[in-house]
Image (cartoon, rainbow over all chains, first blue to last red; front, top):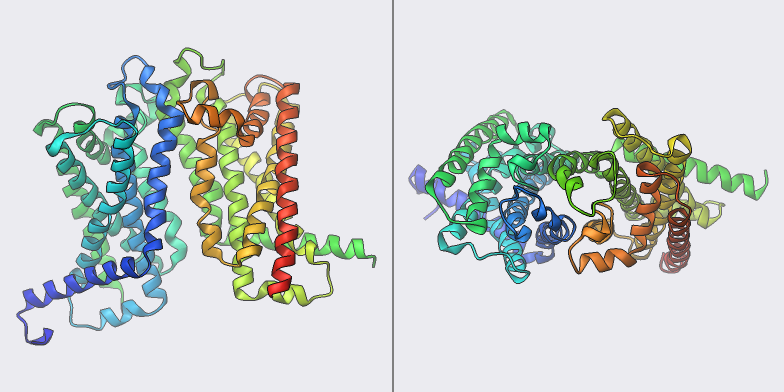
Amino acid sequence: MGAASLPPWRANLATIAALIARARNELLRVPAAAIPGVLAPTIFFLGLNGAFGALTGLTGFTTGSYESFIVPISMLQGAGFTGAATGVNLARDIEQGWLDRLLVSPAPRWVLLAGMVLAAGARALIPATAVLAVALAVGAHWPGGAGLLIAFAMVVATAAIAACWGAMLALRFKSQSAAPLMQAGMLALILLTTAYAPLALLQGWLQDVARVNPITEVVEAARQGFVGGVSWADTWPGLLALAALLALLGALALREMRRTGV
Amino acid sequence: MSALTTNARVVTALGARSIRQTFRRPQLIAPIVVFPTLLLAIQTGGAGSAVELPGFPPVQSFLQFMLAGAMMQSLMLAGNSGGIAMAIDIEMGFTDRLFAAPISRFSIVLGRLAGTAALGLFSALWFLAIGLAFGAEIAAGVPGALIAIVLVTVAALAIGGIAAAIALRTGTASVVQGMFPLVFVVLFLSSAFFPQELMIEPAKTIAEYNPFSFIVEGVREPIVAGVGASELLAATLAVTGIALLGLGLSARALRHRLRVG
């Protein structure tokens, strides 16, 4: 049965599945393309741990294990890079004219965006799993089933947010030259939080920024299982922040998608 | 016109082209300026309390300590960006046209390295300006700043030599781009971001022998304490060694490129 004869909701699901399959095929056909996305957060994890590990000696540091403290940051960084890569790939598709072909199809714009964003969320599991494996190997605490589930949920949603951000910029600038902006934006969003140290130990200006940065709640939610117990009180602010960011950036990306003509 | 003058003009022209190319392409300038500045701000704000740790060397502030690390990051990424741009030139056939011109082949490489060195100079000035703007003092004053600037400029040329060698050998921009994570491996395994004595093993031991630690200490010493003869000597030797290695590898890779076309 052709897509034209399907009810709209099934045709939309089929299009989303096809876009996810395309992203999967890109990965399977060029596995080396996934290496930088895995390598970068892993290097950052090991490097930050080696360089800044002594910070746990500061009065007020909430754990004695810096690898446990920093691992959710590296997992989220991997998600950020993966999501931003979706924007870079979309910019490439725009430059090569492939997006034009998608835009003349009967698929609604939101379906095209959803396919890319969901693919980014799924793909972010690869660097997150790799970083987690390395972290556990070098002594990070096991976060428990619930802690792990929450951390991975935060990773997937962060990648979706990064993909919306990347797609928005790709559709606005229509050039891979915007790649640094996609990557730097996510890097700043994730690191301008309690990434390196607990809130009380951050320098004044960063403390103020981290306090209002919604990703701080995401970091704390993803981190809780690694540095202590899991609680609903530490989880819901992260979920709320992710939902709000996804709604905002998703709407902005969709607006750019709707503005994009053929 | 003598051969020396001609080659000097080629080096100047290609160096100027390299600088313009970097500033015109966001992909090339962002790693040199945007990312190191962002990380400097975040690391200073996030790990600034580290100066209270027992054993942390006496410094005016963590920003003052971190300036040398930011310069190192920037200069290494400048070298890498130079290599990427050179590989793009090879892919696009621009290098072949230069090879066909009646000029010294090595002046083509030197032109690119001159541009990378100029970007290193820019990086040193940029981070010194940021440091001064945000209250960091240069302990050794103007002579200390000049030492830091010279070391960073020459170090950029040295790293650029290695990146140029990889570009000439492979002729593929993606391979040189793939070296990007290695820059961070080298940086994290040096004393660029934290005092070597306070690092965690095995990074601590590796940093002790990493030649980039010698360079970063040579740049840092005049900023945080004053000109130290031993640090300056060690940094000079490390920079010279890496520069000779880079130039040697570039010369070999150039011969290879001329052979395979």
